[in-house]
Amino acid sequence: MPEKLLEGKVGLIVGVANDRSYAWHIAKAITDHGGTCAYAHIPGEKNERRTRKAAEKVTADPWLFPCDAGSDAELDALFDAYKGQFDRMDFLVHSIAFAEREWLQPGKFAETPREAYMQAIDISAYTLAAMANRAKGMMPAGGSIMCMSYYGAEKVVPGYNVMGVAKSALESTARYLAAELGQQGIRVNSISGGYLKTLASSAVGGTDVFDEHAVTRSPLRRGVEGGDVGGTAVYLASDLSSGVTGETIYVDCGVNTIGV
Ligand SMILES: NC(=O)c1ccc[n+]([C@@H]2O[C@H](COP(=O)([O-])OP(=O)(O)OC[C@H]3O[C@@H](n4cnc5c(N)ncnc54)[C@H](O)[C@@H]3O)[C@@H](O)[C@H]2O)c1
Image (cartoon, rainbow, N blue to C red; front, side, top):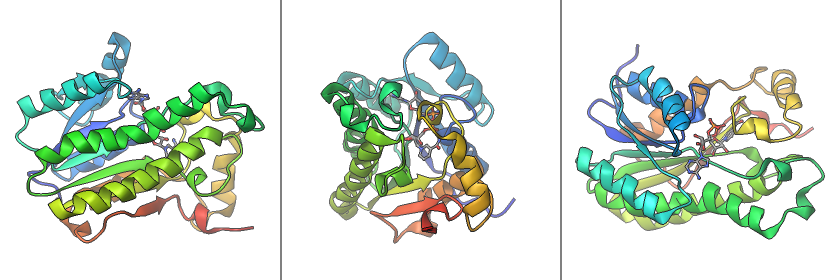
């Protein structure tokens, strides 16, 4: 194991559904580097059980709190509860997204109803600003906020549809937050992860070809693994990235760099 980069750092991870979640790989990498992770999960007994089971694989006796990020009251309750338990937040990981599966199918974008569009942007993008606003008071000596994006923010990926729009909003939200919170020493960055089979990605139609595409066409000739993103999250949470903010960092084995 290389030198531990996050010894003494503590923070909140939002988005561990199970041990395949990007957030889980991030929590594991942060914990392996000596950091302490607290967890927020979507409400419901089954969801709590699943998140707890996954969190226990990396954190002994993990601190968990339920939160539907679509509710301001639940966000307040989460950050208040965190404040009652921990004296500061060195890092915040936003790894959540939601859009109705029906609108994540190739050829369906133009039909997206207003409500589904607004919900996708609300849960997948606005919540980053909502969480950063609640976290900033707990980062008096600075901190690192990161979120998970995808290439569909920048280029059209069939089936990604309204989630692509939401990811564009998410990356832009991260930049505006970075500009505003930078004076407090808080850095905000997006990690644009490659395709990984998870609950969320299984909702997107047509992803069966993504793995093959990564293996045959990416510079590294393989699909991304959770640990690739975990390593970048450690870098972003650590002082090694002290001059990095407002960026979108691709961790996709180079898939985004290939044109034809
Ligand atoms: N899997 C991929 O291929 C891929 C690629 C790039 C980016 N991402 C992004 O990574 C992030 C994590 O997704 P994942 O692939 O690990 O899937 P996942 O299903 O494991 O995680 C998604 C999480 O979002 C949470 N969530 C959804 N609605 C919520 C709400 N209203 N309140 C609170 N939490 C809510 C879910 O509970 C779940 O924990 C998402 O932002 C996703 O868009 C995924």
